[in-house]
Length: 401
Image (cartoon, rainbow, N blue to C red; front, side, top):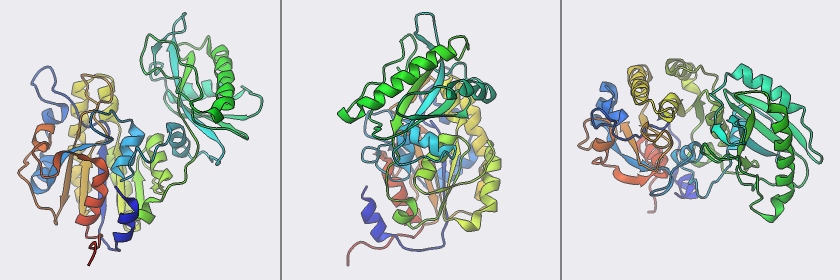
């Protein structure tokens, strides 16, 4: 998607757009009824919107490619994640409000569990409490590496932020997270010639972290991924002409929003709390991004029924969101996370777009199979969603004479 073209065609307006993202929404048929989590859930409100609007299945990256959460959200916001690549470290830093400088290298960290042989047995250390995370970060803050200043900050649960500050640092490093259990953490190998010194500094940090955490079971080691420096990208408002706000409580998603220039609202973890925050700031913005996390985390835990319940909770809260009378509402996910796989997957993601300007299709229920017959198509790029939302909000000018 050509952001410069959209920037040229955007036009001012008073219409409001809401994008509700159920993280990891897409699924696979479960063991009991042959339906996905979304198809199993009782969703009368979503079904009504689907019947009145237009539906389809989007691909966050490209066919067959499994998307991370960061790239998946960038695609939803219209930024091609192949062209606009960013490590998760920057998103984590921005998500917790860390004052990242241009030459800093940031990494997303997980406290993890390793056995006596140094092999990972739990990539998330049992999802330790945030208070325990804070205690462990205190241990890591005492680590010094020559040639750079080290910052360690708690993010949430097992997640933390690592930032190196100094001259000549580069973020082009291999992740140390093997992404599976039964393997030792990987070495932070440089993927370009200029990143060799940074890789050496990170290796020193990890060696010292291993010593300091050795007796801190279950969080007795760390995994790092998403090494990156702060990029210089076009702002969301400059591209679309929309003042944008994010109702997200998880730091990573707040980070994506801030990276693009959105205001991250102060919100609670519940969806009703987020909708209440939207209501308070409704007149201040044109675009609202609402994030729901637990559809994803329940599926990563392999809990099919809990994911169904999370989807049903979104449906129950939907009338409160519709009472705000948005002109365009998008409901989708950033990627698929089937409970059967306990991980992100490459499967296309259901999406519905509702507006008075829609040309309704034949879909009558919100689910993977119905959406495959929708007017948006069974496989279309997620980057197309923002131009479609802008057009349905009547904020796009004609191209050419």
